[in-house]
Image 1 (cartoon, rainbow over the protein chains, first blue to last red):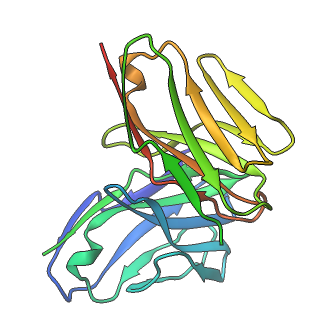
Image 2 (image 1 turned 135 degrees about the vertical axis):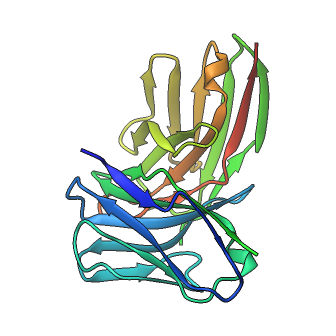
Length: 110
Length: 112
């Protein structure tokens, strides 16, 4: 099993550009989520999904969209990148309460 | 919603000492309390968890205690080693279909 995978590992965007961060898991987990990690701020929940076709907002959803068309994939879209979205993004899937994190995407917006 | 406070934000100890990290939570319905360790440049990984039906759980050099009345829980690491240096996150959730709320993290530095 590859577990949770994320692409790309690093990305630099200009303000106003859009992009999609990819996340996939091969463990057949129903629950998936996106977090951002900023220094001193911990892991803040952006969006989550409890199954294919079902998504909901977390603590910091503004500027991000998600969709869940399959159990395996949970992409995160930045609609119009802003410098405040410079962060490390982690995708996670969960089973029986334990969160399995992907390796992360380091995003810089200039 | 749930609010998790974690202290201290930084903890520096000498190798062999014990380290204690404390968290408080606000939602009395929370019943699952995991701890994650994140090494530099890596992803967070679960190291130990506790459910509300027990007060303490141990796994070799790490232990977690829970006081439901006071709504706080703690991570204890004994005989610390340099490889324990990392950021530790506590979290709280209602279990089942609920996504956990994380604390802000504690950077543990173990000096050889």
